[in-house]
Length: 129
Image (cartoon, rainbow, N blue to C red; front, side, top):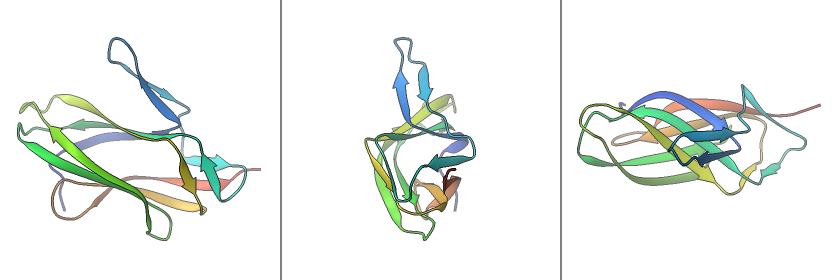
């Protein structure tokens, strides 16, 4: 139940852009909950940023999935990651052009490099005032 990478932090936001100097610009950061006008809610853009460390220099496949409150995967994917062998900090950016948040409740963000998925963060979705 371990990952080949260390997840230092995860941020849920509307969008992520990369500046000319390679700094990440996180837009519309959600703090604690994604508050929407109606459920279900369709968001035009949605993104996850994770600060990671990967100590190995071998290429591995990193898989992710986003689970709704009932445990159903509403988004999933995978791609290669390659570390520098020294554990230098790195950014992991996952962007969704559109996402349907059909339920109120706790959504889970999970990653795996081998074996089983591990929940690395979560966030609440609720209807606002």
